[in-house]
Amino acid sequence: MLLVQFKTEDGARRVGVLEHDTIRVIDGYDSTYALAQAAIRAKRGLAALAAEAVGTGTEDYATVANAGRLLAPLDHADPAHCYVTGTGLTHLGSADTRDAMHKKIGGAVESLSDSMKMFRMGVEGGKPPAGTAGVQPEWFYKGDGSIVAASGQPLRMPEFALDGGEEPEIAGLYVIGDDGQPYRLGYAIGNEFSDHVTERLNYLYLAHSKLRACGLGPALLVGELPPHVEGTSRILDGQGQVRWQKAFVSGEQNMSHTIANLEHHHFKYPLFRRAGDVHIHFFGTATLSVADNIVVQPGETFEIAAPAFGPALRNTLATYPAGIAKVTPL
Image (cartoon, rainbow, N blue to C red):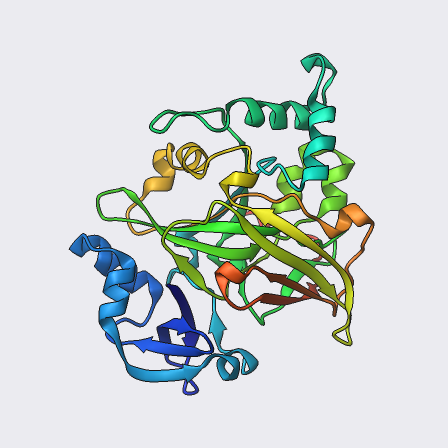
């Protein structure tokens, strides 16, 4: 099942089930969040509750998307109660990439960079037996719900940024129940989007490089993630022509960590189990246009597509002014 959130022509919020090119509107709930909370409290599956609540109303997906009325597939009425986070060095990549990576992490540990040590730790201990904890992954904070762009909305980077590059990833979408338990609604395709030039200046700048916008959606895949996911990441120029593209793979079959291990090391902190909060957690990538020396320009569009997630995610790169931050003493 694919769920989408959108606005009607008069601005009202709605959530619906996407079937081919048609959105079947769900009655009684104006958001994925409300639907999820109802499912949690009723101890029911999200897909079953959504299917039961589908009404007779429909919307044409293309019409909604072209009008800019899509919303991210999960959000919170108060963006401060939505955490956007992620993990890195979690993907094995294509066969060629895997072979090259294993050569890099071979040999004595002391000869490896910190990043390669972290990757090697994941390869060796990121898939523990069910019910046990494996090695911790790299972890980072991106922001709150205010940084999330729906498909069709621009991805805005500050003018001081040295780069704005895509990261095609899968994100887990969660709501924390009244019992303090994380509940996974499902997954969405995403563009985690980072400043790779800043990151490469020094790996200690990783935290700065991640404080950027991200793209999410357009649809939420309810249920479990397929073990093997294939997709394509593209950069389109200002005329809509493909300037760069590359296939990517994800899913646990192509990862050095299990989803359960990544979730454990995020939600093990009580801070991230506050009742009512939303979490959007990116699981990492192995495909980047910056690795092919592509510099994306404002006005160009990121397109990330994977058939399992329905329609493609598209966001156009834009900038916003960012002067010197001023603090007023009291």
